[in-house]
Length: 350
Image (tube, rainbow, N blue to C red; front, side, top):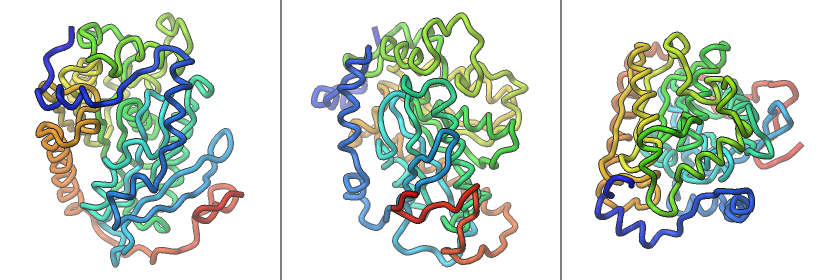
């Protein structure tokens, strides 16, 4: 039985339309909602933010990314935060607009630039496919920092749930393969461990939320059935990373609910990061279920979680900016950096 919920969250949960897929039929039914989610829906609450789309090269063909930034650009890009946003959905659901408001709050607060990636989903695209697309977006974002008008020394990776696991894997891959330098990673209730046998996993989740059955199904979609008997890359299952593999990762923020199945793997991953010398802040929210701050945003605990997350980013950003030796970037609108062929302009295909 899951731990007791915060009273406001428990009340909010009663009015939520919740569900988690336990098989492919349920997955397909839930995916129908993804096609209805758009930038226009998100921007209703962010009138000062504009949206552009780019088609960018990826290993299996082009993918779409959305770029969110303020209508009015700052005079200089130095000191401007860049956020690569990786959406939730267990790597089997969702699109780049799902819960992107988490990143847009920082576009609004800090004048940041956000790139949201439309990565391929399992089971149609299993294994490294989602991570490959996220890595392609990371490279494109880093190479085009001047056009996007952010400081390449202030590149954040932000992921939620399944996207949080991808963000953690992306940090490892980029570190080990001399990819773009990630300055900071924010992992919100990340999905990190396919074993699915921790105490919090066996305690279960509130009815209708992401539970152990949905989690097992999602990992089977990504890794294939019987994956427990195989060696799995830490890029796909970051909780498998060794101390040596974790050394050198950037400062990390992790938060998770007390009453959700990912609690113990998040605590374990934070402990591994500390052991590897990685500066890490961890919050376990008493009475919080999976994605509580996204689903019941008006609850006091939800507002507190978002405020503390933002305060941590603020502190990190202030410290980081003070250490940078600034040099003026060329003006926005410079020619796109080439990544193979010429990249497309906003809103255009090739």
